[in-house]
Image (cartoon, rainbow, N blue to C red; front, side, top):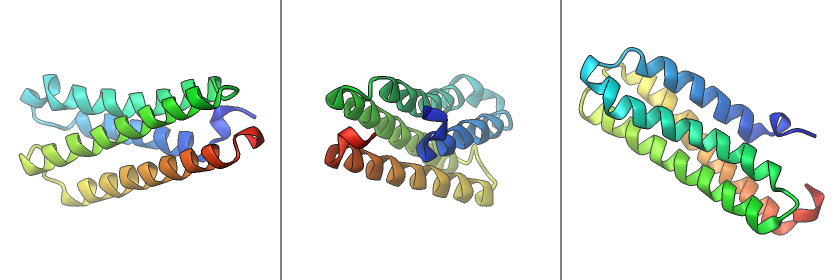
Length: 123
């Protein structure tokens, strides 16, 4: 099995791609502020899933990197909300769609962490 088979990685990949596309349409002044931060945090969530998977033999490391992924995902939601609240994102439908997807990813990562905690040797 590969990390590419993990549902959380697949969803994190979608989030990265959609966040990247969204940031290209932000106002110019945001390109060096929130746009960079939200791209980094979304990519970090995906990368931490990969790094955790690479350390899956070691339960504590696996969980640690999954928690990093969850934290980066939370950061991504915070940046998204900031962009919407400051009206840098004006497309409410896009905002809601991204928010739901990122929130769903957070829930799935959290459920995955709990599954690893319960039955580590099965992964």
